[in-house]
Image (cartoon, rainbow, N blue to C red):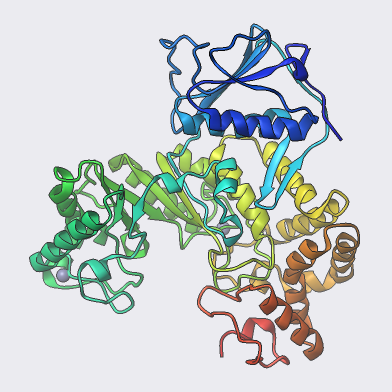
Length: 532
Ligand SMILES: [Zn+2]
Ligand SMILES: [Zn+2]
């Protein structure tokens, strides 16, 4: 049903969309307003004067001397003045984000999934004097879920990593040092020969990738760092192996600084390098990507009563003191158990805010980047996108986005039942700590599932009956998984196994998909299937 929109009391059908430098954002707005109201507004160049205007992007209507002060990270202004509506960023990207924010915040569009835009009910009145100025807190914003792999969806939800031209995303020292020790060790970072090889290869990589703006010089994915006398002495002096690493990375950064002035080097503060060094500070062209891998995701990272997270608080504060380009590698799914429930919805917004408040300017929350999800990956990705974009929204707004997603993605009638299941997992996991490797019954005990079995089964049955059946069934796999944990049953297990396979869902980060003909032992719990 078409919505009514008024601008300063005038019906929107009287308006023309005016563009100047950036027709692309204007065209996108025209398209969505037509889908909203049923009326396609004329799109006119700035050389034409009109009585009622929606001005998108840079046009000659705006005093060119008027600077949009304090707008960063492709933010924008949305305003109604003199009966006209203006959506304007500081550049073309800001214009586009401004259009999407306008559609979300003021018109009621929710870009819940790459295949689904959802329009909430209710007419829209944009009063004279309306003014909304916004800058996202992070300069770099990247989600990593298979379900978000769509460039248009990414723009709609504020992602921008494609503009960063990152080369060598992570764990590059094995290749850069030519030691091929990705899983077996780390190069000796006190060895001048290693430094020379890495410098040489960084230059080579940059020459071969002239668009690269960030190059990763980061430790391999193992904890076997060099314990030679020199490295140990530096580690001790710096109070952390991060000191040895950072001296090395700084030397590479100094080497490229003049020849590649637009390039920054990214390195990890990860596991044994998580603790900030006492002496060495990162160079201006070095980005530190601090990793929250050990943390508890039942409780917010800011929680002083969660011991694991308290240690992380200390580290982020120390890094914040010495680093002006702090990024985060966050972890937002259960990597050895992709399918069963992982109720981290309580912390997604709070953690985003916590990072922003601690001098973080880039976010990479790592999710199930390998396959479709059999739980709430789509919801989680959407909420992460929203929280990364607008980290200072209220809890209320955040949970309203959750409900909007549920309505838009599963269907209005199914949404309340799915929400009941989510609330159940949040409530029943609340008192417990859990990390990203936690077994399902450590998060919510078997007895709790057993005591609520019929109720949960009823919610999923109802949701499936009244909602988008295929989508409900796919997310319901998390519950089937739990049911098979409670009561292994060969027949159900076999059907479940083949359904998961057919949907292209992986069991965990390390085990690839089963082939259909390599059936596991179905008398065992599904948690044991991939670990043969
Ligand atoms: Zn060494
Ligand atoms: Zn905790």
